[in-house]
Image (cartoon, rainbow, N blue to C red):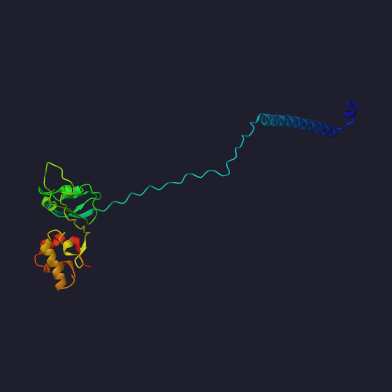
Length: 232
């Protein structure tokens, strides 16, 4: 090599030396790049080896059960209407009274001030349930011919009171009989007969207020019986 190097002129020596140095630089860069690539790839390979396997996926049910339907709250039961009854006979305060639903005959008598001393409450079923528009008539002992006796009488020897027709209120003034009219508060046999006679002589009642034309029926008595009569 030395004989060749000595034959070269200075310019050629410069080119040859530059080419040699450039080759060394290229070889160094290639060696540096190969070494860095190995360092980058190695962790990736290790990570792929030690990677955790994916979690198992549990499929959802195809037909899930629907949620239970919401139940609507039960409606409150309707409240019962009050009862309007007529309490008559041997009571302290006969008249028309309003009682709560489910009341009994005993409640109606108590509302009317209770039975009088001469009342025969044994002739009634005090536990009977009341109905709207019903009349509760408490008979006197003289009506049922009850006689206190220490000995018990047979059914054949005890006189029975005549059965009283039950009237459903309100009653029609143009159709009611004298017996039915007698069950109105403050209307006895005489006034009941006058009402029937007025109907026969004058004609049909056109209104309840026309009762004022019947002799013996004043404003106070008319207002007492007004809820219990109608004109049809």
